[in-house]
Length: 442
Picture 1 (spheres, rainbow, N blue to C red):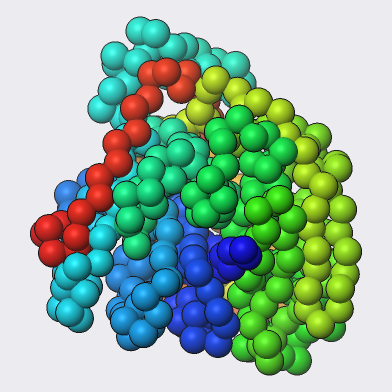
Picture 2: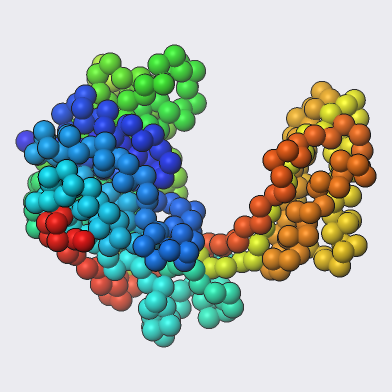
């Protein structure tokens, strides 16, 4: 048996047509859609603050709508996604309405919650220090309000949903690779302590989780594939029970799958290659071998694993004041010096108004008579940053000649969510799995 797992989204904002093209042009058993990153979670937390029914990946609604004919025509196809973001239940309800309206109300949706720890932080902090992994600062010293705190769950809750006959699995924060590991564990009845196979499935999940990055996108050799990248093929993993995998893409699609593209993705954002830590396994990437089979097919094998740790990583975000950034185009033979003078004028006028900004950053980009000036400011006080944004336009008549770029209006003041990476014991986190027909989710 070969399990064919494809990934049609590597981040929130990825190509909306890629998932449909994947399943229409290639044989696929499981379609994964990966939408979340640390920044994305903060954005979704902000959306949920404004609207309790928001906070999930809205792109998933459009993607699911495009997939409805395929779901009707291909009853074997399953979808596994972390589109739930900060609000998996609201995401499930929206998806369920789309399915029911298309006559697919019997399709079972599995929803995983329990990763959101924000409401439980006061209780959990009595048992866990939540030390910042970068600075070692204890959580008790953090005076700022917490916006979100989400544990990176592993594959087991997703496996439970699939075992409950869920055809669509929606979760919040999980390890990215878990979207692939779970279907493989379910398909091949893999034990929770089969470390080498779990490591192999994790490597596969890591290879396809970023979408077209493994099929030629973002490659250092991108120019070789540029001619046909407008129709770039998204990845498919042909997974065997042993854990051996072939990475490929749909025939006649753009991009490329070769040893280089796969190796580049294999080493992308992994930290210590001998210890790629996931909730499921401590995977050793140094034992992995890649064999280019030609015809856009690369065999991946040899991953080894050790027992996973007893902790989940937690992505915690807290309020850290406000920021804004403004840009101007500066022209002329003395563009660089005029740009610097313009930046100094903006900041001096903010100080004259009574505000000493906590942090500022000035960039001068370009040359040969044209400079893009970018000035950014950050401060705990919204009013201080607001005043900063009001000092760009006056330069048009009270600054150097040769400035442009005012038509876009004042810079936008935005709240800043800072990142606090930490750990929580797995024993303190209780994932919840619910599976029911689409018609019963709304």
